[in-house]
Length: 497
Ligand code: NAP
Image: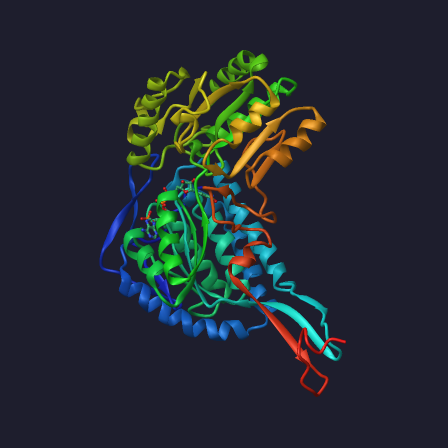
């Protein structure tokens, strides 16, 4: 099934209107090097316009009962379900991930729509006894107002749904800046919201670069929340500016995720988990496995089994369903991976497979990198510490369970970790002692489900979570309400008998 976007140039979606922007740049298919569409390069004036409209829309939207707001999300989920194949194919074209994974990502968005539409009938607050007679006390969630979401190219639809759906069901209006590399999912999702009957101005999409549109959003006084997913450098700068303005900011950033393989592990299962987590999306996932911490007694066996499985990987255009690993997003991504191969070699890690760009035949048209395996890495090497964002694994041998936990935790990031073992005592110790926001047992480092909180500790985030009911905390304020029906002034802490 071939799909086309139906336009050569995207438009912003502001206040329910499709707005043309003069400047634009090309969106390239990383698998073929072909231009897919032109994406607008908007500026601060477009952001200002969107915020003005969103402010008005939000006032009305906040008064719509939450169960009715949720009906729109339900309809969005239904339309996404109908269009799953179209969305998945467009996603593969702009991002490169293979079709099976693209379908999985779109499904994540569908799941999020249905889950958050359920929240319209919950959005639970608390009632609690007041300390004084004839007095009622409760807390409830209130929308924040106009919120800004800034999303990366590696999950162009799932991450946007983790952020925009809770924001919308909670009564906020959204300004969304998608990554310039992958704007088509934003365009498609805006069309779906339009068809689902979302009132004008509740969701606004402003295309453009981070330095123009993103920066204008971060600096805008009337955008009261920034929910950002992307790199640490960008996140840190955004947080600094938001701190200056006392603006709420939720950050989801990089990872250096490890699979631990103990001496009692099912090695074949561990290899499957490693291959899927390390080479899925060509290693360009925030949760990608880029370190394998292996007990020295099974190191050689594991190396052999990984090398064997790597031979089955088929690298190429993700639209061809016989391929299992797609391209790297762009030339800059390729250069970064190449530089880490040199760093790893110079640090003394042993290269067992890959380590090179693929340029033969059809590969020559896109950005392809061979799945790569380093072994005998040590915990402090840069390849074992820094995010490479490509199909590169470093094996780090350790002598004990305790050392494995220490190595896992010895990085600046804290997103995802995994352990393969059959020992129930180790399982429980590991889930307690691994310091990441997500822990898997006998599974790889990827595979989050949307009704659980997604996010990381330490350098990965700043304490917030995407998805799960916890996502609502980013987009709501807690309001405490006291109703005194005694007919007299009762002073808390003072008139208590
Ligand atoms: P990035 O360069 O930081 O970009 C992310 C988004 O921020 C893009 O929309 C980008 O816009 C925008 N941006 C760039 N500069 C900005 C600025 N000065 N002000 C405001 N916005 C700005 O990150 P990336 O390289 O695209 O994404 C990969 C990173 O995301 C990796 O580190 C990965 O681990 C992380 N990630 C984390 C999670 C998680 O949940 N923890 C999930 C996925 C990805 P333009 O690109 O359009 O200029």
